[in-house]
Length: 433
Image (tube, rainbow, N blue to C red; front, side, top):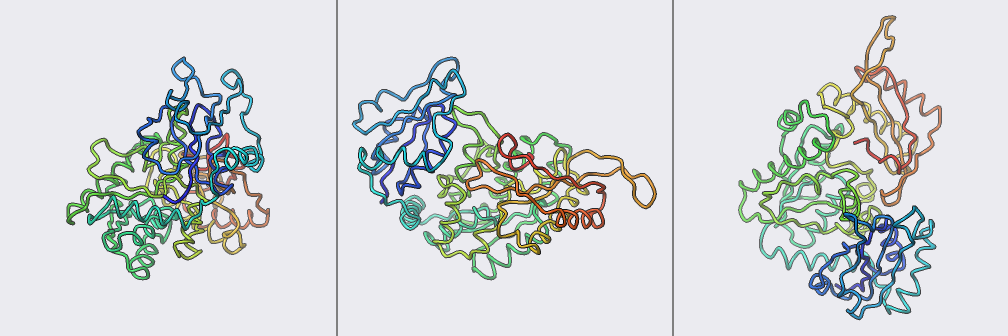
């Protein structure tokens, strides 16, 4: 690894992600690790220049205050300790402004640690390519290629590292957006000449999800079934020992840490079966979303792919809330297509970070063709964010909202209301489930 590194020990702070981003904003690589990291693990990390002990309101675990292991205080590395009496109140340990955090850390990072500002996507890519080649050797890697930003960047990294040793598998689980499976095949098989296996598993997934209403259970079913599909495809091939995933840091954080509760289990972190037969390859697991996009551009991916709006691994399964039914799933798919088309017509597809529709599992009374109807609502969600850890709502014009509403009510079967979600993250999450 060419980059110098600052380690951030999670001692219960709720601002770990912001601190990590602040260090990287200074041009120095940073990683977040649990408070009980073993010294042997740290010694495997090259170019560690200093440690930030990041305490905060979650410092009490199982009734006792946690601390870094004793070796941290005797290892000789510079330490920067942060902890308010935040274990007893809600006082923030860091300023609210990200730039101010970076400036607070600048003297420690450069004057005390003597770190070099050599964190760049080019160096990151070079390091990851070397690590992948060393770890994989002459074996093959199976990649779940959804066509989204994260899996596309992983595919580009792996193609650069191991070429035809990568086998991409695109699973149509019936929870994708309108026209998406066809687009994935066209782009990756026809245009990028990837070794792509297409699997039609629509009935298989929807049958598994029948009558399942709990969102965590849905996510875990989807994640586990993905792995089963990959195992089946791997058995048809030779030498598949590794499974690549587009896991990024917000996925890991929201799936729970030793000092923070689960926000939601992501299909690639919270739904993996215990008897997984592959070794995992997750080359972008330490990157935030904006860094993933920068990585994609540095790898030469087209901007249209890199800046495509995020799409959750469980797909429309977490936008068809409650127990999934095929007719309501189709209402989500159709209304989402209308929203995306109208956003593109209005020029918002390049300025709004993420936008989608949700169809919840309840109905309300309405009137259609002079008679009572009892149909679903469609909820519109449009947000802007940098790193997916916090998000603000996009303010949409009334003429645009009227146009989208009229189209959805006229074209989407089984819908009689259109609502708009204007809740920021936090306290809401970006997705509904």
